[in-house]
Image (cartoon, rainbow, N blue to C red):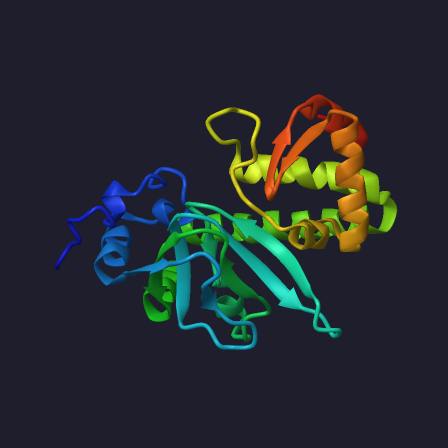
Length: 236
């Protein structure tokens, strides 16, 4: 069996201890490493398109990706934000459906593609990997249910504060410890909040005026995360 020996090899991946695919038996990790295809995507490039059929699953080696769905009015709805170590495309593959969302790189990103036949074979023959995938699906369902509840019950101001904290939990800070380590447009933030762009711009300005955040173009600094936590009405 031929193994990858460069920096894209699974044994060199920064997420080899945390990615769900690395919970597979060693024989399948070796197979993933042998058969995977590593691709580089520039910021804004499409990884896969909504409405097309999957031919495998993707694991993010480095970078950031958004999953977005087009509504009936043609407006984008961001459904997930993903980072290094995350796996995407598995739900459509397992259900036999077309992709329900498109995947777009938020920055320069490296993604490893694992063919469908190999992934399905590993799931069928490796109970530990199957269990980890079930856990992953359950977690995603819980997050979706929570978001629906918050959209129905929480005011926009609370949802914006929660969204900023969610972005922080997903991507962390830059080296200064206060600037969110991702650049999102006001429209993309509004999309995550589930409100109009105008409302998001107004509330962000209010947060800035109150000294809770600072804005520099698409860069957002969380000056008072504890205040955001209070506004978001979260328990911890």
